[in-house]
Length: 288
Ligand SMILES: [Zn+2]
Ligand SMILES: [Zn+2]
Image (cartoon, rainbow, N blue to C red):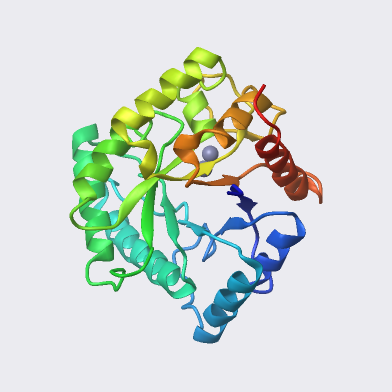
């Protein structure tokens, strides 16, 4: 089966335009923001726009549809007002994701600064459960994907164990699965680059998160060294990860069901095309 490969796209002129853009650059899946990532308020999705998106996706065979949550949402903030705002904003994210017919909504698990990690974990689970309470997700393919982070101080989700713990706590209240980011994994200290390191890292992913739960891989090369905890994305093949681990990942049978989505820098007009093509080529080149 052909791998689902795509990239984060802008939505100027309407989110449905990204479907055409995806096909233009050889992508069969994509991610977008359903609101301005740095503003709390967002408009509702017009039914005719959602219908347009559905029709275009079906016609062009583009999916899964992935939405990335706004950066303002912090589900484990020590500040009650921020947590309440985050609950409302995340509820809006879920409503829009369901309206667009998105399969996945990616969420960074937040910063527990001022609390203990355990308290942060408890608050994150509580906020997410409250956000989705009563919304009509049953019977849809919709899942919230908890993304692993670069492991900066106070950020929740810097290890596979922490991501797994949050997923475990949410399992009975919400449809949850996982998004792993190659750059975050690498700078958090996991070895994706050496043959034995890659295998060890994936064994660990299996024993904590479970590879079947990894619905999306964010495919980003890294500007910083492994273990640096610095989250700076680089073009595929041009960073400290390099091409080989992406090739291995794209051929890894444990992730045949996953979508592979780049969030690489856009420095030049054809950078989106180049990064999608780079991943596509690695997926089509047999492992040596
Ligand atoms: Zn990411
Ligand atoms: Zn990142």
